[in-house]
Image (cartoon, rainbow, N blue to C red; front, side):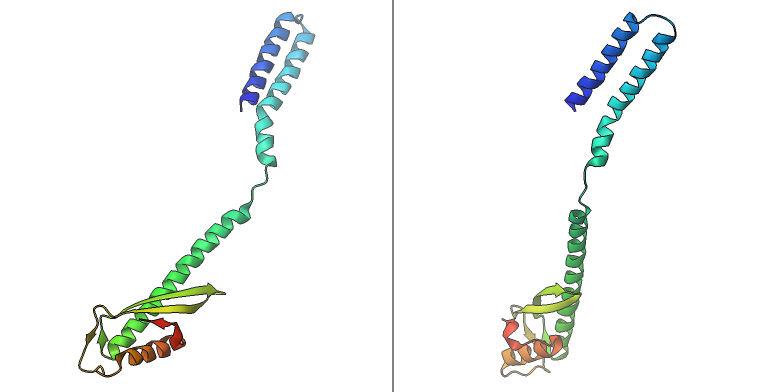
Length: 153
């Protein structure tokens, strides 16, 4: 930027010096027009540099794409968590927290872990009172179509 400012100032100064020294008449107007063109080229030189720089749009599209995919993944996980919570409530298990982790590939979510939080668990009359852990695992495994090994209490 400094070099550009110095070149503009130099051309202006040189143009003034030539204007003072040059004779009157057609030669003076010819020299002024030449310096006007040179001045315009010097003013436009930063634009040429800006146009010639290669902008990598892939970097920006990747960020937009990954942000979009993260939103889709979070929406799918939230939907699955609500579905599991509803299935547990239908079976008589209230206030069980469910957190799902997964990977999104080709617009399909593969569940890697299911965390079951039993902190506020309330058993209703319709819930079986024996072997609750296995029953909850069965409900979650059937609802999400996952192996029981990915379910953690």
